[in-house]
Length: 388
Image: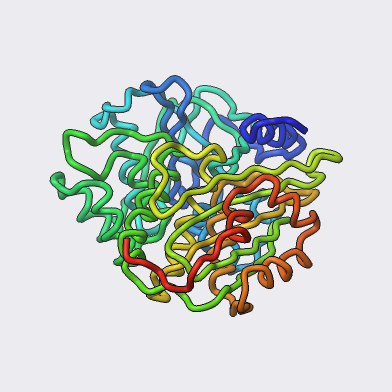
């Protein structure tokens, strides 16, 4: 199938209309997990608003994807509670940070716990939304009225909010070091609550996810590039949500390739997409989209914890029944893979041979599409990482 990844994923998301969202009326009392959403259509005018569930009390887990795989939620579990989130919308300019609705979604994005919320919509919310970059959610409608209860801010995010001289990338790096969740930082960045004051603006949700992945990956790369390389080949694996992931670490300076296959998801198709970088981060946007950056962050995170440097070739297979749930799927699965005990090998060929026994497609299919995965067989790479 000769098709680009964007077009392929558009076909995948168009096939999700069988899912039904929660049925709600024009008035809704409940809580926000906390959760907000900012669209990209019409940029620099964007649709902003809260996402609210009729459930009251602690709904934090509904917008905390870091929790889903450790809690062993399956795909149906995730889709079910995500479609219970109702999105409110108001169109504003990206610099309209003094707008009343924007102020309230900023409060929500900085919250440390679920936020009591009351919404009145202009019409009955409808529809469902699935996307390859962000998590799915349920019906949506324009806002008529929107009120929230008292909000307790997460203390580290509060510090970033009030420091209008702090660059966003620097803030993200420090907040990460303080243990602030990825999902919390992403929402705060999206609502314009961090960065140099004059530069603050609303950032569409899908863009803010990749922005935080990229900032954290760059932050971690600047640390691991000075470490010694691992001294053998290692394979980390993990399977969940109709995916299999294999991470091959190589005893080399940093180099990275992401190769993903979608196998019989729509029908009889077998499509593969790949992108890569050598030694230094990519400067142009990846042809495979946000999953490239979110996987890269997850691998670099593990290397920094090891205090080691390595190259990484990451293979992913998505199988029949797979539904796009957002790039959290890649980030959290690769994070889970990197927490497993690795299999160790003395040669790259031996590592490849092992991985080939776990894949449904022949390894040659990945090698035809990738670059680094093949070049590694041709070159005589040493186990001694050079300082870059």
